[in-house]
Length: 631
Image 1 (cartoon, helix red, strand yellow):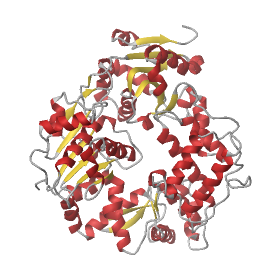
Image 2 (cartoon, one colour):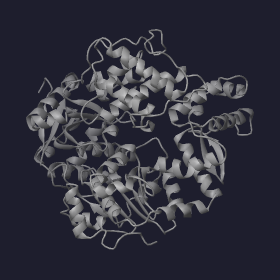
Image 3 (cartoon, rainbow, N blue to C red):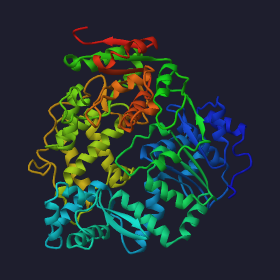
Image 4 (cartoon, rainbow, N blue to C red):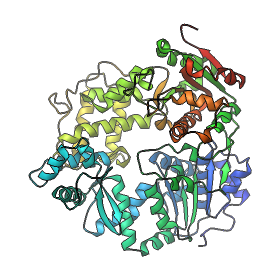
């Protein structure tokens, strides 16, 4: 299919002009190889290589030269954060704004599926979509189960299952032979033709008719729609002759299969970009097909990282799990450090890192981007070992995490969210706050009420209830909530917003007997836990830090520590390619964490874990500090 572009759309002169407008430079041939390609291809991009900026530049150039008013470019990403970043990048060029409206589409794979496939299929059958959200579905399913005698057999059966609540909450549609069947996360403890099996499917379809779905339902409904309307794939691929898939490494089996059915006929140019070595998302269907499919053996590579220098690049290269890649560091040649401790000095690990950051990172940069403390595990498990998780090193983190899920009051929820509020984490804090409000509100909303939507689905216009809700959240997070009158005013505004969003009166947050508990003002302004910010590696994906500390955490099996294992590979005393899958999964997370900082990368581990490797690491230029009292 010939693309509707002017002949000189991707010419060197035009590219350099738009790049200058966007503040970008193009010193590497690999950048030009991707930028000027109009054929199906894969781009494997190292962390900090400027992949998103390059994607933004290419889209801005395509927008400038696009000639069709009915055909468009489709840009799909895995997360809303990445989608928003792409939009922000292309709008720095004047021509790029053309891609924000029809006939073009920029969104997540989920929103694409919803907009072009599942949504039309549901509405075409006389249905509606009220909410697509796993948590909202789970709450609605549990409420519906308890109604009357319609589900008496199912209720009795699930009562005797240890995971009965999860079996119901995780019920989802799958497309099998053009029909929608109902399954759960494991095999059901009853036959589909039994009374419980019939009620299980009936409850799922009842919620679907009410417009309440899980995220995965959309893919099954979309797949069935494509089977029943085979012309639809041709129509969509004709509408979008050029498709760009960002964050391809996180695309799962269902998404990959669906996209292949729509765009895999060969007529559409499909360019896929990502970093397979940052493929860390779990809990959704994954397969070796998806991992192997991207990148293709002939993929173009962006190996040069401008985020960090040679030292971090060298060790990051040693941790590339899925596809070996020699990463070249073109940034500041920062410091790589190893903090050694014993069980008694665990509380001193983070303060020692903060002091090291103050020594190695300019103060003005730290004030903008505080040091980050990362771990693969939030809380300790049953194993009798210490430390195991972030909470072992930073007890305040555990308190904040527990509070965020089980708040006794709105004040607790706000305090926990304000604790998370810092440069670079504002989105996460707002999401945590709103998710907490939704979770507490859910049991008290009338059955006929509309579930509160997730933050990403709230409108941004100040004139809408979504925009007003966003403004309220911002005021809760940054305003003087401890001052007399401010707290009460915010609670009143939130009460109205919830009522408008849910279509029903839930409660008055000014009422101390309200279901959320006493809506008292926080006793004092909330601040960060300290100079550093703690969090999981998973949530730090895509971020850039000035200084990063990776905490040694116990793996899922309770047998080995992740940093302890990584040190062997980084010291040249192990071969990652021959490691077990469990070890490889742990190293993927360490890789993501290790490629965040610009100035300082530090690892913290027990002295006995580092003993076999310390000399080799010191020989590679690592700074090693023993913070244990017995040093």
